[in-house]
Amino acid sequence: MACTCVVGLQWGDEAKGKIVDLLTAEHDLVVRYNGGANAGHTVVRGGKTFKFSLLPTGVLHPHLRSVIGNGVVVYPVRFFEEVNQLRAAGVPVGGDNLVVSDHAHVIFPYHLEEERLLEEGGGEQAIGTTGRGIGPCYQDKVGRRHAVRLGELAHPDHLLKRLGPIVAYKNALLRSLSPTARQFDAETLCRDYTRAMEQVRPHLADTTRLLHEGLKAGKSILYEAAQGSLLDVDHGTYPYVTSSNSSPAGVWSGSGVPARRLTRVVGVIKAYSTRVGRGPFPTELNDGPDGIGEKIRKTGREYGTVTGRPRRCGWFDAVAARYSAALGGVDDLAVMLLDVLSDLDELRIATAYELDGERIDCFPSDSFLLERCKPVYETMPGWRVDVSGARKPADLPSAARRYVDRLSELLKLPVSIVSVGPDRVQTIFMR
Ligand code: IMP
Image (cartoon, rainbow, N blue to C red):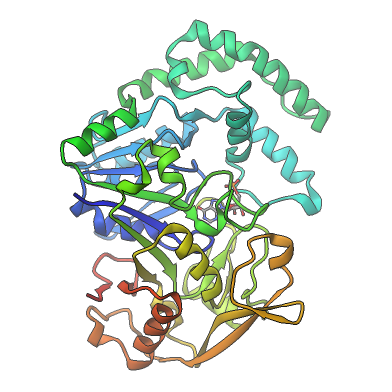
């Protein structure tokens, strides 16, 4: 019985949505276990583009059960925006094919305000977040006193009792950050969220139990990680990370299913690197408007799905990807967006770093150290042929094939999938 995790090995936006979409046929349940509406998953199906930030990509397949696990933080407003977008496109979404954990934590508008004030006033300390209230909500979750779980919204009297002191505390906190900060009213929030609950209720479930029952009944699970492993709060480039475990480390805590049930971890990598938001990025190409970085951005349409921000672009970093592949127990690789590199004379891959004059092969995940690392590159010839029409390994020009093989060698993992365009058909299965 398959239990697969699809995880990004870089800083997110590795096009995991396409791989999840390809693997759905082999699974019964699709689970998101971390993050919230900060994730940007784009899936192109039958010429239609779907963008998700909170819902699992699996919702495009109504025969599957899509699950938002307890490790996710949920903003009910966004939940319904995405559900309605799907219904408008004729995709059926109901309580039987989309379930959300009653233990998932709830994002309130004061979380968004708190994040806005911290980021705007943060100067050098700003993280460059997506502004979706993710960090403040997880902060409250871990702090316990000021957090609300989704199941609590079904009990208005209880909710009002909880929100009274929480909102008083949040208002004081926000005012201390700025005298012009927005202020909130517990009764209004209680009314709005109780109303939202009416719509959420058909989807609400004890998802941990549901997943365990599914496993007992022989169902297979596909885990859809949000963000990339290098943004993992424990193992990523801290503090420039997201606030959850975006590597497979989050599967167990974020879904309640033991990680040892995983039978396959697919590590998704772009054929180059990108990053949005602040933080160290050793292979970043800062080579101006006519440079390769800008060329990759334009060709790869490297703009954030959630915020529209231009993504920082650079060469593939094998040091970083080797680290995150080990961290996630990756079994095989999916190499995405190979077509984007088609127009380059030569390509570079970082195979080691130089830190304070010393060559190192390991990845220092502390940002202050990584900032000082200079990549040691090896250069490979480009292929200068459009590969977007390739459908099998033999269709790839030999230089492209050599590039993919080299990534595999450097990461010591087999490449199972190469993607040469956004459409489902633009996929090469390597074995
Ligand atoms: P937050 O998750 O909104 O708190 O943002 C923290 C960091 O993670 C910022 O650098 C964001 O740009 C980055 N980030 C969050 N979600 C994604 C994603 O889905 N793709 C890429 N970067 C992300």
